[in-house]
Image 1 (cartoon, each protein chain N blue to C red):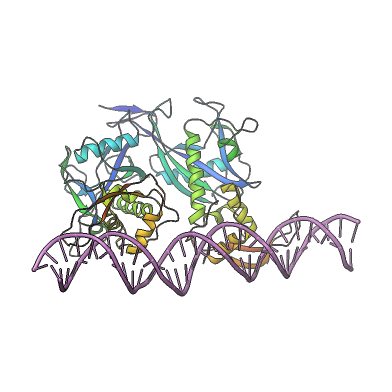
Image 2 (cartoon, protein in one colour; image 1 turned 90 degrees about the horizontal axis):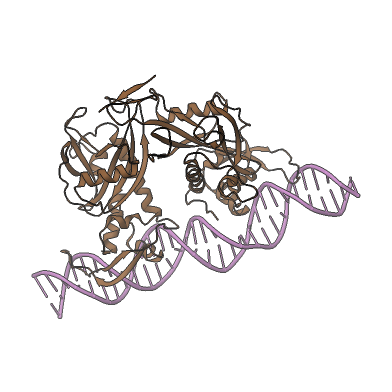
Length: 238
Length: 238
DNA sequence: CGATGTTGTAGTCATTCTGACTATAACAGG
DNA sequence: CCTGTTATAGTCAGAATGACTACAACATCG
């Protein structure tokens, strides 16, 4: 199908930085491209916006398609729009990038147009050293990923977003490991508890304790997400 | 001229929320539309992105065109992208909205495609009461303006952005009036000074005092912008 | 020319929040 | 029952805040 227009023709796409916590590290979903350009290299999942949907709907749809779930169980928000004229060599593509995050998603299935799909540790992609480094990302997706990580890092400070990374019910040590994974360094144990428990509506306690871990030790109390969305004053990073 | 494409045809535009401080109030630049749709009503200035430029370049270009200056002397940043399928009744238009701000700009000249252009007090537009209310904005521009104001309000808390609203050199009372205009209520006098002067690189003092005001009183010391960009911990609002 | 009202500048003080700790309680496994 | 490990509670000096009061400098009016 072809279209005509009296204005410069743009394709409008959404790209997704989908984050989760895997093995105590921040991980992002990438797909291996099956087609040119950048065939064989890895990229953020995404797709074109259809005529009858807005960018957010397109992002939700792509989330379902890429993860294979019929309802993506996490958080989604717009990041920013990337519009350099030469960012896609085929044609002019403007990409409305989004950030998504969810608790511990399963290993993804390869999508229709993607050769493969898997989780990557974000730090391996962005601070890759000589020995353990990830692939070079297609298009401007390295920059998008950098911006997306910074958004998540910042939002952990002044919102309750971290609870979206853990499945309910969860323990405070689990929640603290989210901060450790995203920030690269864990917040002080006691001060973290004081802040979370002292912020009205951040978490609500249950009367059940969690399972025993392999490391032993006292079993932690389980909590659920509260209704609060902002943390003020913010939780200190570093 | 017409174009063809194999993807759904989108026009990509930039819209601008240009802020300044006029008579102690936050003001925004609007243009009166000369064409349908919404002919005769007021809208944020904007225009289509050209094939060889990215959104930011398009925004700078529009800034120059709408203000009539050959170099816009202020700050510009991307806000977010609005993409509802029916936001423009003519065709599918995705708008990458931006926020711009500058010190005390002159009364604008009517642009080429706009019937008229002038500054409006933002609160009159957004919280307009029965007697003194501004016009209803075209398209989804009321929502864009709401988001843009909230962005500016938030950024005054944790950045030195306020200095972009005043011309150099400036006095601390002038700078404080920026916060009063944007937040709707002035920060406490003493605490404001302590915070600004205590933040390394927020402002740098000169050894000159400002002119006498009509209200009399001691003449305030003049300052210039410093190199700092963040204020931490943030300045408290309210 | 001094009184007066206005505005800028400096400093105080109780309260809150933080950062860096130490001590204790609960649990698993040998 | 002992031991290592983890969760939970509490302490304390220092920093930042919010709400003030006191003082200095200036313009103008009488």
